[in-house]
Image 1 (cartoon, rainbow, N blue to C red):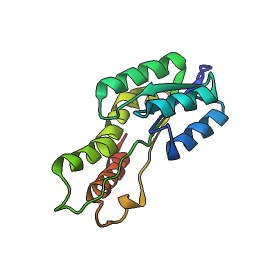
Image 2: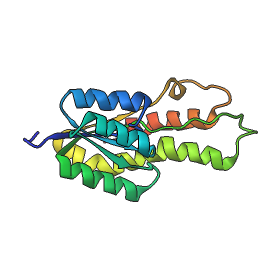
Image 3: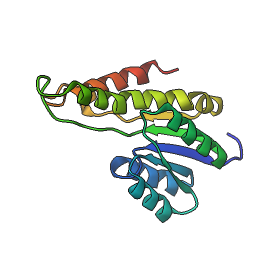
Length: 164
C-alpha cells in the first residue's frame, strides 16, 4: 500500500454494528466514511470522531450516490476497505408481505451490497483492499416471517463467494 491515508467506507455506519465498525477503524487510525441514510446520526458520529471521519449520505440502492461516496473517499486517501453493513428487516409471512416491501428488503440488503462491490471493486483490487459483506444467521437457516430478509442474506453469501 502507498503512503496515502487508508480509507474505509462503512454503509449503515451511523448506528448499531456499523457504528461499532466505524469506531474500530477510526481507533486503528483509518479515515472512515460513515455512509448512511440517517443523516443526523451519521453527521453526529463523524463530528464526534473528528477530522478522520466523514459523513456521506448514501442510499445503497442508488448507483449515482455510490459514485459520490467513492469520489469523496478517493479525495481522502486510498480506499482500502468497504464494509457493506446497511440492511433492513421487515416482518410478515409470504402471504402477508407486500411485493414492494419484499423488493425493498432485497434492494437494500442485496442490491445495495452488489452496487457497493461494483463501485469499489476496481479501486480495492488495485491495492489489495478488502470487502466485508455483513450477513446474518438468516443467511444460513430459514426463519419464519422474515422471508425477504432470509432470501437477501442467503443471496448476499452467494455473491460474496463469487466475487473475484
